[in-house]
Image (tube, rainbow, N blue to C red; front, top):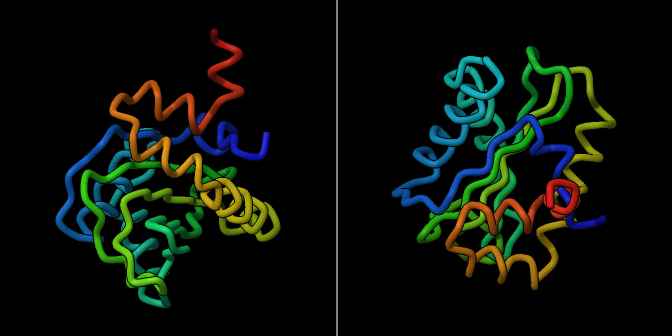
Length: 156
């Protein structure tokens, strides 16, 4: 399914709705959460993501940002998602603050896999209906079903 991010989130993290005051704060929160899940130092993840952010905006427009980085200790691409109560500035080309943030991490040696994963996340968040549903979702289970429908179907 085109809008299914189960493969990236099965070993990743989905956080419920969060408040955040800045891009760095939310990146630190996501890095820490995914670090806890993967056993990788959250500070190393944060530093790698910030290094990439300094190269240019990772906002893809429509209130969506896909911060990403390569992490040597990973074996395969992994993701983390958070929905923000209010958007934060990601220097988006459309000027909109971002409230749907998907952090994508990939191993150093995963050139093609990293690009495929990035394209998959980007395609998923281009879906206006999905973005609207995520923004309306007030429950973590609903967010999980929206982002990982195949996994949700398998456990139902």
